[in-house]
Structures are given as structure tokens and as C-alpha cells.
Image (tube, rainbow, N blue to C red; front, side, top):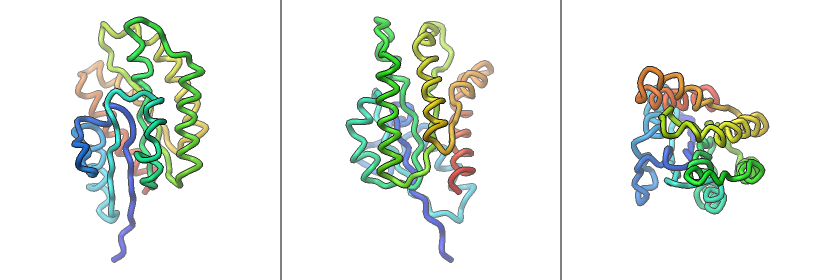
Length: 196
């Protein structure tokens, strides 16, 4: 029996990184990539998956751009799951020296253009999200416009968009851990629908 093959790359920041062991190129960490991979393998035993996690904690869009060749383009994945952008807000929050939206959009668009032009990958864009915590509510003044930007870019470039912020907010009203579960389930289900 010939099995289909699928190389799926999880790319992003610390939410994707999730304490992965970087010396092991196939380690998925302990976050949503690990759970999404388990879900996909269970639901599609007829597919021979290769999963990579190349998320790096603290990365902003500029850092992903700097490493996009070895950590994305060179891998030539069939599928890219992209979650990046929260640190473009978070790292500027203390002083409220927000990164201009035009800079954020230009960097994010460059990432998407490189994926479109230098791979044949299908693309799932996952909206950057923040769980509702009282000392971070002011992030919304910068985060909301950047999320709107990502939604607009996803319409232009992505095969699938996952509204992770909305999912996390809804689930977190019940319990913060349910927010994390909702995101990882959403990734797995949307990846299956889109790519398989």
C-alpha cells in the first residue's frame, strides 16, 4: 500500500516552540504542535507525516524573517502552520513604544511572500492571541490593529485562517486551560480539513 506523505512545519515564537529540544530536529515540544500532530496521526493513519517545529521563543516577525531560509524555505514543507506576531506587541508594551503598524505589516507580508514564492506549501495562518489577564488588558490598544492586519493578510495569502484569539477568549471565560485546548484542537482540525 502506498501511503500519502505530508511534511508539516509549525513555525512561530514561544507558543510554537513550547520547550522543544532544538538538538532534535523532530522534537515538537510540549505545546500545540505536539497535540496537533497526535490528532492528525490518529485521524489519518493512511498518511505518512513528517512534523517539524521550528518555533523560537521571543521571536518577532523580524527574527523569523532573518531565519526564514534555514528554518522554513530549505525544508520545503507541504504545509506551513504559522503563528507569529504576539511579541511584536509584547516586547514594546512596558514603555508603550508600539511598533508602527506599517512596519509590522511589511515584515509579516515579507514572510508570507517568501512562503508563497519559494515553496509550494499550503499555508495556515494562526492569529496571534493573548489570554485575558488583568495586567495585560492595555495590550489591546496595539494588539487589536495588528490582529486585524493579520486577518487581512490571511485573506490574501492563507489557505486557512485560525481565529485563535477569539477561540482563546471564549474558552478562557470558562477556564484558561480550555483556551489552550481550543487552540490546539483548532490547529489539528483545520490542518486535516485543508491538507488531507
